[in-house]
Image (cartoon, rainbow, N blue to C red; front, side, top):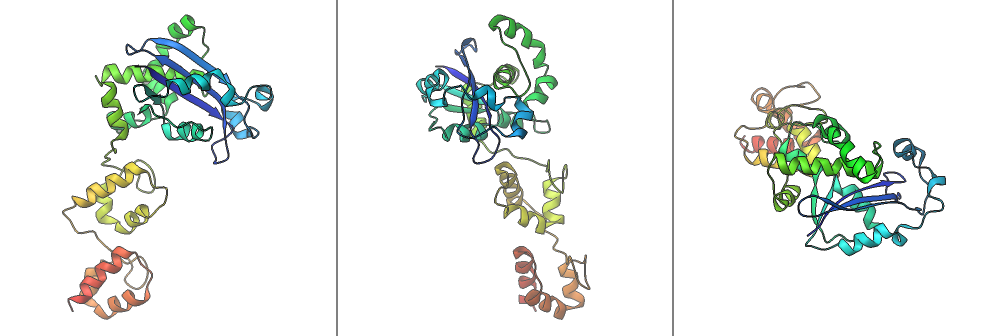
Amino acid sequence: MKIVILDTETTGNKEEDRIIQLSYLVLNENLEIEEIHNELVKPPIPIKFEAMAVHHITNEMVEDKPKIKHTEAYKRLKELNSPENYLVIHNAKFDLDMLAKEGFNPFFKQIDTFRILKHLIPEGKYSLQYNRYALGLYKKENEICETYDIQINAHDALGDVIVLYLLFDYLMKNYQKSFEEMVELTQKPVLYDKFYTGKYKFKEIKEILIKDPDYIEFLLNTADIDMDVKYSIEHHLANLDVEPEYRFGVGKYKGMLIQDVAEIDPQYLSWAYHNMKMSKGMRKKIGEILDRF
């Protein structure tokens, strides 16, 4: 069994972008470093200036490098690509999508430390560099760098791999997780009680389900909704014991509950049902009220 700790740098973060640096460590089951791989590669498209500003790798630095499939790092990664081995990446989707463009289909058991942090430290911050300092990982870097003659730079793939290695070691030991438990946490949806981004940042999801169901419907219909946010909304919806409060957002009864409007002006409610633009949930609720008249 081997554990591969991997990171890449790329020409950018769009669909057309490609890998320019492939770095990874190979560990044994005792988390001891056995191999270090780090290679710059020549991409099929130029490096974008925005990407250079992050990782400081220029087109001149890669123009004489081999294509990724011709590197020893890529060939060795293919050799290690087996279900008996583990692949550890921070925010794995990005790197795996980039590797897929190079014809790499992973058979590893996958561990995503970004998702692990979401489970174990739900109100924390999840960037690798933030946790480098927040968890005190930087205090252990010098020993590794001196032993293996490595220089750590922020947003350099090899530097990030060393930080990722320390993060993985920290999570394994401080939370007493096995390799298989880490794989399970990677695959398991994260259940949030609060929103951590967007219009209702730090608000309880249950509260917003009741107070602003139209916003919830909008979120659920967003194509790129975060899978964990969607899972959390659906979980809390299924366990909601209070009726959502649908209110008019415009018109003469702006801000009023549709139940209250039904009591004082049922004709307006009927008109609104047939003429106003509204969410599917609100239309359904008004329809239920009108059916009782």
